[in-house]
Image (cartoon, rainbow, N blue to C red; front, side):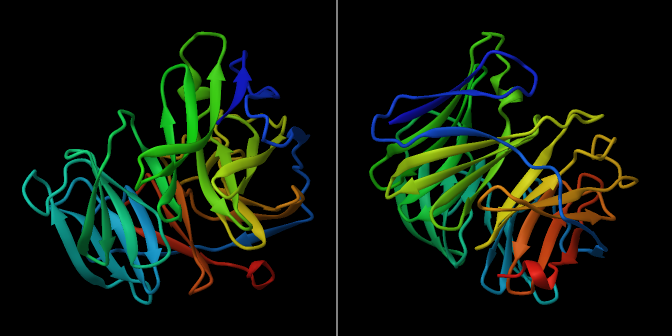
Length: 328
């Protein structure tokens, strides 16, 4: 099944939603709230990692932080979350046994995780640093921003000039179970710009997409391995730099959107700061968290009740506490 959302304008206009799946529920476009009931300042702390890496992907595995870096001797580095000490590094570049070429990994919350070795066109099921299973990947498309739903189901981002897709994919059977397709009907080949997004799995089988270049986020509800309904929360706020959301993380109660909307910079300078817009799953604007730091990516460290951030301006990790009233 494919759920199609079409746009004819380049600007951030409300989308006309159309559905090709008769089993799917209603697609709703709702007004996005931007009036937060409280604004809170958060001070960030900075830690320099003991290994010089540029973090491209990251995930938390119990007490460890797993980072992927493409410009170093190893692809993967694990750090203790308690003090960010380096635990180990593993998997080198190459086509030999136990080596990867241009990999990506699926975010998981335990030490069983999934990597895609693009060079060998195979998924690799991992436990800690050990490879336990290799699964051929038979499709020809660019997988990015992959996260595990319930193994063998993963979600990922896929884009072409005229269309951008979120897909729910079965790794074991190499089949797409369902998808959300964003199409640029203007035929200008700008779908990858118009519909560029970050996403995360949310509570109660939800998928949350936050758009980089428009004031909008989407919440889709999954039923088994299909999309049951989609809610599009569309706002009209404009920005000086044309950027909106750089990342999204979800807890059991809240959606956290890393916002660039009130940052006039290009996010490549630490002279500016970011915000976190907090919504509940009913679309209510709850809190606005103002950072003293320009963040590019965000990760929830539930074990230590804090946000982790990276930035374009350095290779360090920054962190700030999650306020008590926002903890699950």
